[in-house]
Image (cartoon, rainbow, N blue to C red; front, side, top):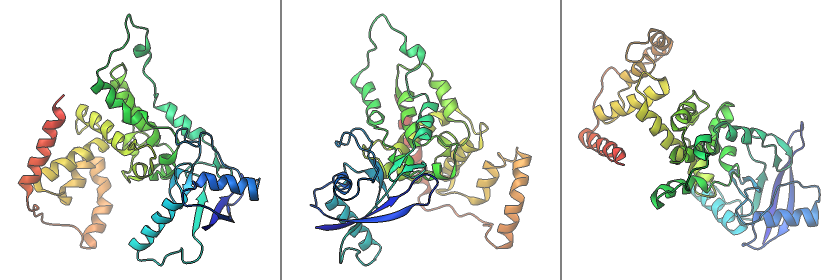
Length: 337
């Protein structure tokens, strides 16, 4: 089958341009196979990274049809099927009536060096910022080896599967708008250290990961990292686990981010859903104790009132008792060792 490859090409300090190539391929050919053929047979100036070709090294991460993925893992047949499924779900006409098209672009949130090659210093610096290695005390040579039960070791497996390909970082909405956020890759590795019983700095780590929006509270919970991860690390799930560890150790006065979570849960338990009349006052105004926070709500409150959008009454949802019971049951389960 013939495929049209639209490749975004760019050099430093220049605008990106799309260059198209036509190639006869088999459905089982990977995107990396096709890029190799384009470079070897049509245009030797095309630049991209590759190494193992076995979904292990993470070198060939790039944006394939608007999502980050490994070029060595995705093949033509699955991509055509995926794009057709998206078109059908959106009731759009199929783009494959003539020649199927594949759009290949460099990873997002990172500066382009050339074509599909990006500069990843920021990616690695953010990883280093979470200290993704067992603490010095934990690494001290013991009289005997560290022993872990299979259950304790299994807690580290999912995060250990991360190959640092950068796909999650590339598609992260929080990284795009907040340059201080360390990124889902770093926090997934951070959770591995929190879960590792050999580490002696758990409390210090949690304080570090709790700092403003550069740590776990910078995550917007968009789920993009989970959807593009080729190794099923589920970075968002790991970030959530760190949040739970922090929330267990902090009360609502600790910070607005922590209060946001605790108030949300408190109000849902009370009424089945959030009472918007109380939420902002309790979170921003810290239960009427933060005068500066309360005053900051004034302009927004006035606009809401003037536009008739302030809810003067609150009606609990149906099944509030069931919701409360479920939340309390989950909280009890989480307390169990």
